Length: 291
Image (cartoon, rainbow, N blue to C red; front, side):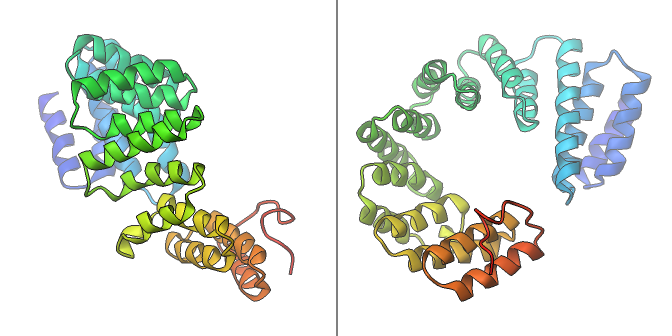
């Protein structure tokens, strides 16, 4: 068993993920009551999924990893680290409810670790349990007052609750805690947009270097601010740049909509063709206008 486990670790370390997965599966077959074997299988499934270029295969491996980690939790002595890993695997597989249970159990075993209530809070948000999420995030914030992430998540809660001013204050507090993290500008931009301060959104985000602005969340906020200020061509141009980089059919289809609204049928037709080439099969009447 030890030799086989070492072989899995070696294969993982050498990026031979298919080999690691084969050995790990075999381990669980010959030792079906060994929690360490199932934890190793979960790690191998995650690694193989991350390396796969196929989205369907990635999702299947995330689900398999979550199943393996759940089995490892059942077979192993109580461990906050294992519970946390199982929670991450469950959430990645699309099962936030199970993830919440694992994170909460981890927090009971290791109450001084801010990661457990933070992850629980984010999963609770995903399931719409806002009050419980706020409580968990406040605990995480108290345990690690230097972390921007619970503060940023609390900003999101304030915004969805209709308190844009509090959301803005919290978003700015989070950004002060980690001023080099560009993504922390997004919650601040969302709060400013809610308050109708669209020019401030552009000032905040256009201060970033071009490369740093090339994320979907930041591009969305910049484009939306241009739209709100009545400059639809600028909004379409910004989004089209992201659609070019991202390579997704959804981004290309949205570029069609934005260029159509900007009054440029030539660009709209060009991006309609790109969307089709990328496999877009949405409702063409609403998302991709006819030529």
